[in-house]
Length: 153
Image (cartoon, rainbow, N blue to C red; front, side):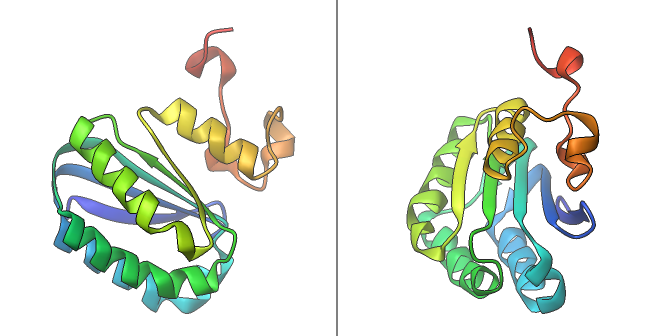
């Protein structure tokens, strides 16, 4: 399946990764699975959705609206969560912004980025980790940064 979810950071984070051709049906079914796992969803503080390995995103505004309706259940369990979407492809970026605009009333703070470093930095800021490296980030180890490797100083 080219669209998969991984719980990270002791269940406080959700990483969704799309590879190859990703369909709206896969995204929809994935959202249903997350919404159905109530106990896991209650622990979530953030989600990072990564379309950087997606070669084609087959989604329409109507299919995205359907995903948002499923997201409503998860949003009730995760008020104030943060969602960062990585979408370097112009179409994936546009459809992700469409999701962001129609998902405003979910109670999540969401943003769409062209690359991973900006998405990680935004999540770190929103989670109160801005300016921390190492031990201060132990709660969210998947959001650690290697300043020398990822960023020019």
